[in-house]
Amino acid sequence: MTLARNGKPLWWQRIRWQKVLGWVVLGLLVLITLFPFYWMLRISLSDNRALAANAGSMLPADFTLGAFERVLGLSSLDEARKQGGSGASIDFWRYLWNSVLTSAVITAGQVLFSAMAAYAFARLRWRGREAVFFVFLTALMIPPIFTALPNFVLMRDLNLLNTYAAIILPFFFMTPFAVFFMRQFMLGISREVEEAARIDGAGHPRIFFRIILPMSRAPLMTLTLLAYITAWNEYFWPLLVGQGENVRVLTVALGVFRSQTPQGSPDWAGLMAATLLAALPVIALFVAFGRRIVDSIQFSGIK
Image 1: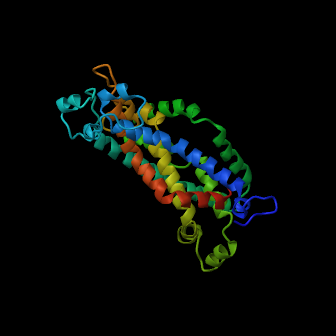
Image 2: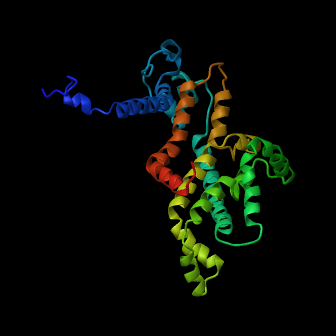
Image 3: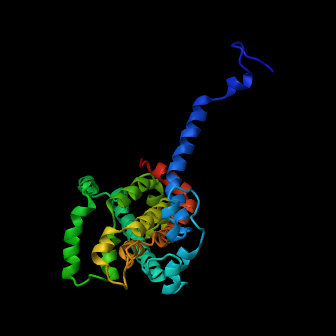
């Protein structure tokens, strides 16, 4: 064995302990982050009646898929009670459709109008542009809870409560973060390309839709994902204006399902199964496009 001058093996000297420590800390953080998802999966695969007796076990208690069958409507009420369910029900497919629909419409509107506003702030020259942009950005400082009551009163006066429009409209047009995110990218686009298009007779609408938007494909994809995930996870506003059965979204439905305890004990297995199914689309999107999101945020200079 080859030894170094201090008497220790050479392979020992070549180990970068700071890097090893960094990987250990990173691994611990990953475990801490993923543990709630594992616990959710463990409860969803357990028999609801056996959970209390096996509270400290890391494995599913009396493994069963009954919770998923109850949530997906594959078992009757009597079968659900025999499997340990509380008798609470959830129309999963209807609420899933409501979440998909409202999130998709909000995302489409928010991305389009935010990109248009960012184009105006980044590429057009007009008096007071920076001052208006500063005022616009100050909206980032206002907590959303402050605007909830005025928006609710507005929706009530417009007779839009318990409609898709009430859930969608406050988030449809743009957000300060989305405009700022797109503006940072558009500031870096060469003006020579834009001036060449203008010499060929292109106006602002044509430059925006034919040149700027195709060149902004990567940040647009990132913004689309961020907007969709945010809209999907929204809970408080849909709870205020979308209590109706026909427009209820999944996040609100899970809360209602939790509160339905005819026999006094919540159906924790069913609740975790529904939560896991509701989180799957967002997890899939992030796994597929997470790297692109990080790259685009770094490129835009937002930290």
